[in-house]
View 1 (cartoon, helix red, strand yellow):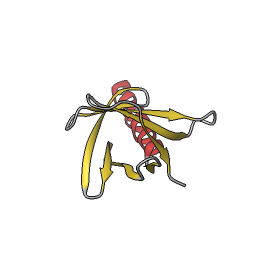
View 2 (view 1 turned 90 degrees about the vertical axis):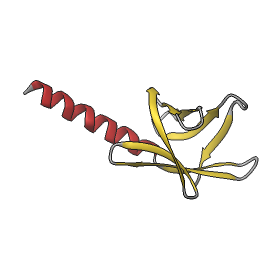
View 3 (view 1 turned 180 degrees about the vertical axis):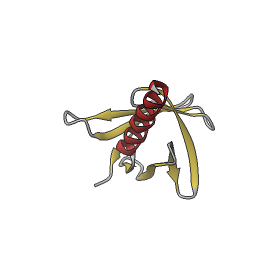
View 4 (view 1 turned 45 degrees about the vertical axis):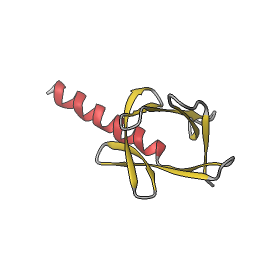
Length: 100
C-alpha cells in the first residue's frame, strides 16, 4: 500500500512540476521563440513543429538528449518560472525570457 502512495505522490509532483514550465519564451536579442510543453508526464521544448524531449537531471534543469543541450530554468521570488538559460557544446548562456 505504501508503495502505491509513494508512486502516486511522485507522479503528482512530476505532473505539477512540469506544468510550472509550460510557457512560450523568447530570446529578444535574435527574436527566437521557443515553447515548453508537457503532455502525459513528459516535458519537451517545441519550435514550430519540432519537439525536443527533455529529461530532468536536477531541480529546474533538463537535458535534451537529441542535441546535447542543457536547459537551466530560473524562478523569481514568488517561485514562478521567468526565464531559462540554454547551454550546449558550441554556445553558452543563451537566455530565453517568458513571453508576456
